[in-house]
Length: 381
Ligand SMILES: *Cc1c(COP(=O)(O)O)cnc(C)c1O
Image (cartoon, rainbow, N blue to C red; front, side):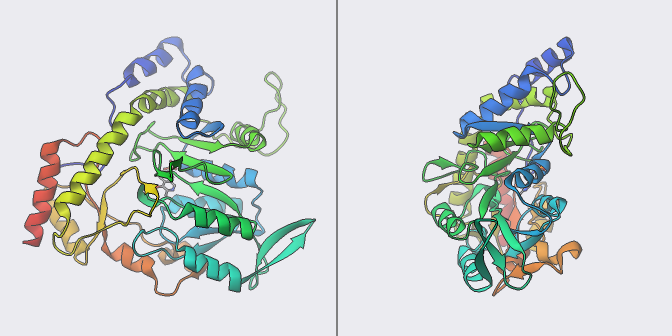
């Protein structure tokens, strides 16, 4: 079976992990944590990086430090991995789901703007201006764009909207390490961005995340909250309800080794993406994800649309090519059916019904790539 997406561990992973084991620095203290944070922040040109257990908890903490409370709304796209919505729910806030663009599969900014203009009102509270949902009366504190599959929306437009309506941008950039918009790295457009290093992501620590931000205060508070809000190195004094969300040194060691190889891995992803686009163009009714103008996507996981998705999925998996359907839209999951969903034509559903992801590991061989393409062509013949 040609796997969908497996990590590439051909660098210093063994050496660094062995060093952790040899020295006993396997847990929450140790030099690799800081090094990993710095490497990720430096790579995407952010000032601060805060390592955490995974992307999900990173999204949770990013919202807390941003000031999201249980009385607020947070806006998110309807097509995303469940973790985005779970993280909003952990804060107690109520999500507002926005349908996606049928070409880029990112949050539809036209719909977003219309909703903010017509369904919301701005007013002052405590000397600050905020946007409130007219129906619920709740404040909309933040917007969480998700850079689905390493693509992004028009970030210029998103920033203009967020500024106009006083919304904090928290980027769910868990899939987009290495993606840029007009040369600027994903994760650095908002107040905070959150990367994931889960096993299936472009690089991996097994499980892990890094929050990035340019704001020193937010960075400090995020570090504080992810480490049980302890105020003293010696004494057990804590000044708020914190979380044990830190990344351990042994995983950060893997992260450092992975970051060292990242430029090479990113190059391989771009080559893979270009190969698939060239070879699968015009095959059956295949439609590629439209990369937004100005975006250079990281090519993390190759995914396309076809009206015969279910059949193709069965065919590929039966013929040694591991493939997966896309996420069920959030509004269709039993926990979220009652949430606010802003849509006209429910593009989310057609994206869900038609999208299929095919093998995209960084280590995929040319031979395997050709087998994947051949198998897909056979299916449509
Ligand atoms: C992977 C992912 C997450 C969560 O990251 P974990 O590290 O697995 O917790 C969140 N959002 C999206 C869109 C993801 O793909």
